[in-house]
Each structure stands twice: as C-alpha cells, then as structure tokens.
Image (tube, rainbow, N blue to C red; front, side, top):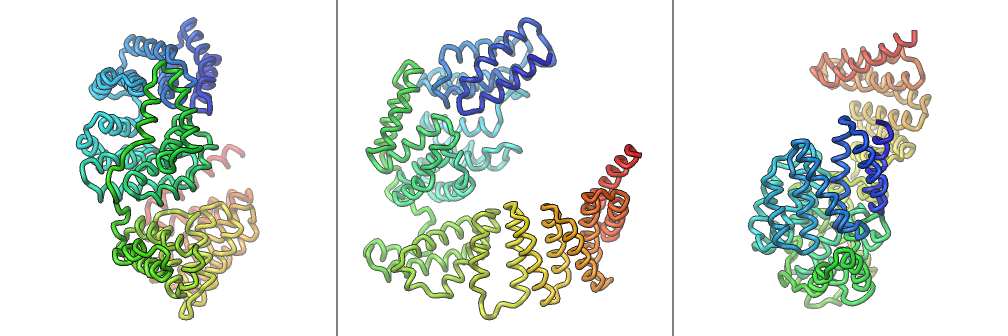
Length: 550
C-alpha cells in the first residue's frame, strides 16, 4: 500500500528532526490509513513508528502529554493483538514516568521492561542499558549501576552508536558514589575524547562538564563550556540544550546559561502539568560537589610541579617546570600505550604554552618531543583532524639526524591522514614525496606502497592518467624486488589491483578483469586467501556485467 508506506516514511523522517511534533500529522494519517485498510506487510513499520514518536517525549516539549499517553495505549493494544512482547511499551512508559517525576510508576515500568522479552520492536539494548544506569543512580542504587555498567562494558552491544561513550558518561556519578575515583577519571577521559569533536553530542558534553565541576575541576569545566557552547546552535533537542545550560550554569553561576535553562524548563513544566523538571533544575544549579578534588589524570606524574604552580600561580618558571613534567609524562604514557592520557596531558602542556611568558622558556627539544607524542597519540586514537596539524609541525621542524626512512614514514602518515579527511589532491602529493624518501632509503616495499596509495588518491579525484603513471613507476620498483621475498608478491598484487580499478574507471573492463585475475593469483601464491577471494568476486561481478552488455 504505497500511500501508507509513504506516510510511515514521512513520519519517520520528521520524528527525528528538529521538531518531532511535525511527525504527528502524517503519523495520525498513517494510523487511519492502516485501520481503514490493514496491510500486514506494513504493520511492523507502523508499530516501529509508534515507538519512535513516544521515545521523543522527554526530549521535546512540543509533544503533547495526553496524546503521547494515548499513543502508548494504542501501541500496547496493537502489540497485544499481534502477540508481540510489550518491552518497547514498558520502556516508553518508564521514560515518560521518569520525566514526569512519578517515581512509583517509573520503577514499576523499569522492572516490567527488564522482565519482558526482547523482540524486534525492543529499543536498542545498548541504549536501554544507558537508561538503566541513569535510573539506578537516580533511585540511590549506585552499586547496581556500576554492576550494570561493568557488565555492559564486558559484553558491548554490536551496532549501538552510544557505546561505549554514553555508557561511560552515564556511569560517572555512580563511580564517584562508590568511591572508585580512578574508574571515574578513566571513564571521563575515554568517553569525552569520543564525543568532543561532535557538536550534536551536547548532552554528553553537559555530562562531562557537570562531572568536572562537581569533582573540583573548575578550570576543566570552564574549558569545556567555552569549547562546546556553540553546540546550542546545532540540531539538538530542547532537553539536551537544557542539560548543557544546567551544567554551564552550575559552573559559572547566575547568567545567560541559567536564564536559558529556566526558559527551557518552563516549556516542559507547562506541557507536563507539574513543576517536577523545574525542581530538578533548581537542585542541579545548587548541587554540592561530589569530592573536593579528583585529579583527572592522577597527578600526571607531576605532583611536585602541580603543587608549586598552585602555591605560586604567577610564577612563570614554576609553570614551565610543570609543562616539562607534563611533556615527559605524556611521552611515558604513549610508550605504555596509554594514548588517551598521553593526548590529554600533552594537550594540557600545549595549552600552557599558549602563554607567551611560558613559551619563551620552552626548549626546542621539549617542543619536538611534545609534537611527536601528540602526533603519535592522535594516530593511535584515530583522530585524523587532530593528527594532521601535528604532522605538519613535525615536518616543519625536522631533527638534524632524521633520515629518509623517517621522513618517508611521516610523509606517508600525513598522506593517509589527508586521504581520511577527503583531501585527496594533497594526499597524492604527500604520498609521492613519501615514495621519493623511501626510494632514497632503499625501502622498496614501502616505496611501492606509497606509490600505490598516491595512485589511489589520484584515482579518487579522477586523475586517471596520473594514477596510471604512478602505477607504472611502482611496477618498475616491483621489478627490483627480490623474488624470494614473500612480500614481493604482495607488493606486486596491490599494484595490479589498483591498476585494475583504474582500467575499470576508464571503461576498459576486459583489461580490468585480466589484471584482477593476476591479482588473485598473486595473493593465493602467498596464502592471502581473503584478498584473493575479493579479487575473484570482483572478476565474477565484472564478467557478468560484460556478458549482460554483449
């Protein structure tokens, strides 16, 4: 039933937009259309949309209370008639009761949700766990919240885009409440890095600001407010905006954020018909600190320097001593593969160096170590946007003893970062430069790899002639490789494969197929069967296309 399917699709698009109340009109029409002429093929989609509408209730004040409750009643009836589990219904009723401040109903629906079997209509298991942790904290059961969090971390839900960052953030108050401050600091460090570049993660930013200010890290909280306040202009829910304004208001005191928080919460209280959310705002703005001072990075190995800076905050030499200690600690953290801490501590040092008085004391070798540590840590954390500027700084200050092998490695990393960031013309140039350095170092396999990657970037931007030229250069290097080296066949294979893709884009399918067959044979000769299978799948697909065209 095409009209019904389109109405359902329209409601789905709107319900996750900036104003989910706009979904109510097409949703109502979809329900009416289904009831007028039931279509079993569309029932699952309709029931799923029912849940989507109810799930937005605590995020947007524009969704009416009475209508939401009617939708949930209707959803429950339809699931019962279909013989489905009521887990999604209980989950939605739990969220609504929690938002309205009905503690008894919220607990009853929480228990009923967990008792009901999961089915295809149940909300994401990972997201359920996050709300479970919040509910347990809010109802004074932090030990149980930690247990749920630890179990969830041990068996993550595949495909949940909220794990692990939202789980970690949700568990922060529980870790502090049970006295596991090391776990709390680790959860903050890990979770925050996963969301800090996303303006849509305003609720998560609010959680981390609240955690910082309530654990004695006022400066860190203020830093996060300044970094993320622009997220209020992003496509975020009213409740996410409220959470951010509350955290910022608790940090900075009365002002623009508290005023905005009161405006936002007034809309929820009017819709809800009570003052429960307003009471939560009042409590949040006056919330007492959880602990006096939780060192988010332990003492960073810099206890003595930290004490000196705190005792003499205007002493530039003490501040430089702290920066030096932080650089050394960041280096050790990276060597121990504790890259989140390495990056965070290194960034603290970098922030301090923004003070010209401290920067004047900086020693070139210390700065070089800091750049290299941050570059390496960002690479390991897969943060290309942060890693690229550090790569450029590293290349701008080449150490005197740097050899072509080192230069080739840095240039290749830079090229790969540029490719990740879809800056393929620049990536091609960096990779060509990397290949030249590898050639000087007589690292032929690395030279082939860099040329192949450069050709790939050229192909991405449609420079097929240049891609072909780079691959011809790579083939000449392959001819110099020792035949007894198993890596030689792999190097030969990647060049043949890239050339096959170039021929494909040129519309020369018979040649592409022939090159892919050679690729498969080379991979098979060294036991790389998965790569060989991929090449043969390509051959089968392209051969079928050729046959259909003939």
